[in-house]
Image (cartoon, rainbow, N blue to C red; front, side):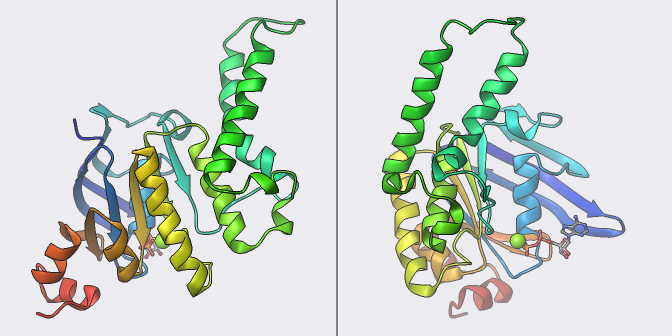
Length: 256
Ligand code: ADP
Ligand code: MG
């Protein structure tokens, strides 16, 4: 079953139609890059999938279910932003644990238990600590768990953001230009690490970038977006060898 099916989605902000009928099917476990020039609507599409915005028309289905009205927190997706969005006053450990704590809090509200420790609460705390450690080890930041974000390099912060995204084992990762704040060398290294993370987790990755080289090297398929529309969606070599039109060819840097 297709993990993520976007059908004829439009999005308006006031009088401006930012997405003009986007259709895209992303398979379970796929690494799909969404590329296109700044302002073409990449972040908007990702935010719609994540549930941070609502589309004007069209449908988004996750694992066969229409997610209209399903809250962002209930979509089983993790979004990673360009700006990392870490809490500066929390340690790395607590930053990574944030999604787990939120899930526990919303779970608890449904239980009418007052004035005593719930049975299993201690086991849940142990499990949470184990999940945080596992995520930190996977991203090789387990030696940094007691630091604050301000004591980390840009690359380390980005790994904390990735660890926080993977800690609750989402069905899909939505990454919005996660490397654009890193210098060139670190960008190449982190790119390899993200590809490795995808292989290891087997989850669906939707990776937004304006860097076509990044997309070419990492993806099973690339969707090229311009002016709120997807012009072509195909495997990297296919896009390079047979671009749909001159705009795609120019953006990818392919001969046409
Ligand atoms: P990209 O991520 O490809 O650079 P965005 O999805 O961020 O593009 O933006 C696409 C267009 O939508 C831009 O013209 C931007 O100014 C506009 N836009 C995005 N968010 C809003 C908003 N909340 N209100 C009004 N316009 C917006
Ligand atoms: Mg953007």
